[in-house]
Image 1: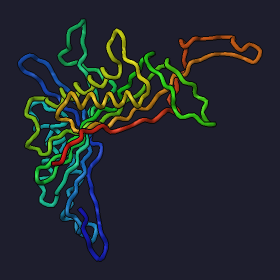
Image 2: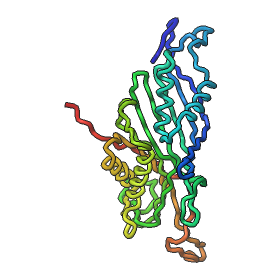
Image 3: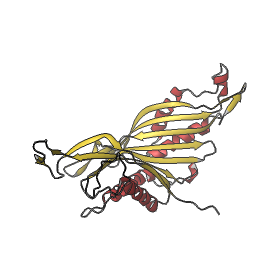
Image 4: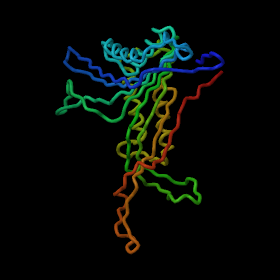
Length: 309
C-alpha cells in the first residue's frame, strides 16, 4: 500500500532476515525427542511514512524485536507443529498485535533433519542431516486473509535410462543429435500454493502440512521415475515436468497451483579417440562426464482452471 507526502509516493517494507532457531520437543511418555531447525525471515508492510518522511520512528517495529519474537513464539509452542503452522502463527502475531502493520510476510526454510535408525530401530534422540529443504511463505493480512505456499528445494533425481530428446528445432547452430536413450538428471525446486484463503480455514489436524509435504514429494518422485520394475519413458524434461505438476493437482484437492523448476543436468557419454585411432576406446554409454554448467533451464507453473459463472 503506497503512502504519499510532498508529491512523493512511498512503498516500503522492513523486516528481519535469517533468524535461525531450533526447537526440541520431548515426549515424557516414551522418551522420544523431536527436532526442527528453521531459518525465519519476516517482512512487515505497515503505515510508517513518518519514519521516512520525518525524524519519527514511533511506528517502526524494531527488527531486533522481530528476532526476539521468533524465539518467544517457538518457546510458546508446547506441542509439535508444522513449519507452515509456525509461519502462520508468526504472521498472525505481527499483523494483529501492531495497529500500524497491515500485512506480515513470513518465509521459513526448514533444514532436513531426519531421525536415524540403529540396527533397524528408530533412535529416540538421534538425527542426521538430509538433503532437500522444506520451504514456506505465509502472507497474513490484518483481516486474517491468508496466502500460503509450501515448497521443496534441492530434490536431486536421476535415472540412467528411459529418457530421450528428438524432433526438436534444427537450424545451422544445432549439432545435438536426436536420441531415445540418455540419462536424465535434475534438481527439482517446487513450490505449491494452497487454496486456503484465511487463517481460520486451515486444517486443524495435527501436523497436517508436514504430512502433505511428504506426500507431495512422494508424488513428484513416483511420477518422475515410474514403476520400479519398468520405469516410465521421458520424451523431454518439459513433458516430465508437466506430468509431475499435473499429478500433484490431481492428488491434492487443496493445492491450487504448483511451480516447478527443473534444470537438465547433463551426464555426457565419454568416448576417447585421436585422429590416428578414431575408435581407441568406445565406452558404449557406460562412462560419463558429469557436468552442471552449462545446463538446460526448464520451469513452468501448472494451475487449476477455475470457472467464473
